[in-house]
Image 1 (cartoon, rainbow, N blue to C red):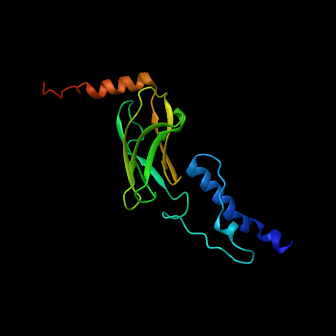
Image 2: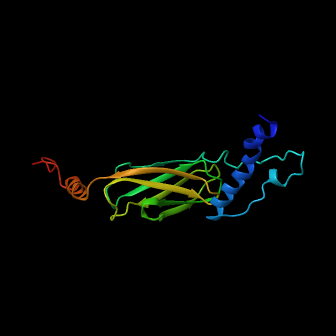
Length: 165
């Protein structure tokens, strides 16, 4: 195997990553001239690391993994760039936006959202997307609508003997 063929995946990686990051940041295809592609032959260019570490470091959690429709829950994320806007959306609803907030200095964000009442039962994904293109997802499960209504009613109805009599 020739040296150029063995190094091709390593040498082409910065260009491919540059194109992928550019496409995520602008929401479409874009032409990016990465430092490695712009360097003169024989010169190795340094690729700067993203502010929050490697892409894909972000994580997300939800305050209640089995909420009722209409409940307020909090979606929290870490690993975003400091002071970047982060949007919470439902991919199953054509990226229906649930809310947004700005990450703090440590890259943490908390977004209070209402669970849409019109969602079907089953697993629902919540996607956090930062303006840098960083993404993280979490999710929740919804009961069938009739079960949801009955559980909500039973939660409201006083328990036997709760009134002291």
